[in-house]
Image (cartoon, rainbow, N blue to C red; front, side):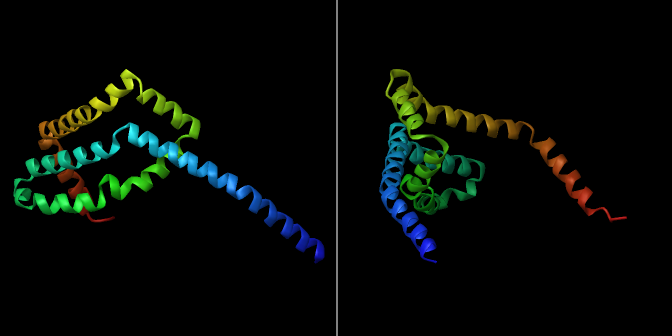
Length: 158
């Protein structure tokens, strides 16, 4: 029992000594992830994405137009940079090592990296518009496929 207590005490002592270093690594790793998100202008991109998404939804469903301020308030509360920042930092910290994060930050500080940050919102908008246009072009086919699927589910089981 005394040996078990010593081993347990030794283990706790090692954890106590190692924990501050591990915590510092975690803090610096999270800081690197946060720095990357800042270098990517993620706060501005989130604001633009929310506005563009709302505009696209209202264009597709004009009856939502009068409710845009309410929808904006909701998305600002739950989908804004401020509301998601900590979780996004965790996602990026889990996806990349601290060194990888620093390397990516270095890229974003180059002229090409800055151009990527500048052009990304515009490219995302164009991509969304392409997707919406493609669905609209083939809407009849989609409706037919959905009707067939519904009919297939309504068949009696044998």
